[in-house]
Image (cartoon, rainbow, N blue to C red; front, side, top):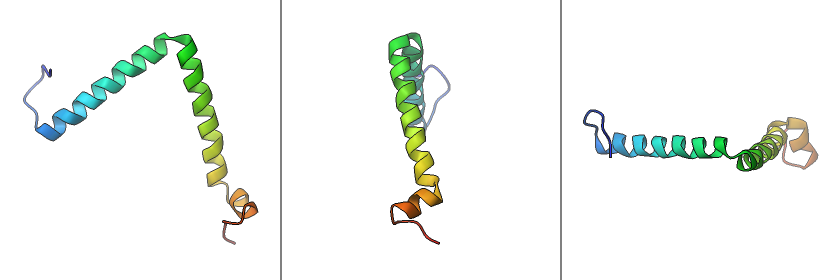
Amino acid sequence: MYLGKEVEADDRWEIERDFETLVRASEISGDKERLKKVQEFAKKQKEAMDKVLDTEYLKSIGIGRD
């Protein structure tokens, strides 16, 4: 249910997804244990991305360029 002005079907889908995302974020931020797990996961993902973006690391595993 959308209470705002009329929107196109594509916009409606995006707005509904955004709303669901906000609801989920609110639920996660209210649950300390769940939030801690998400933060730990995000930290591991960041570490993995840092490796992917590190040219020297890529060279060390044989996929980087000189």
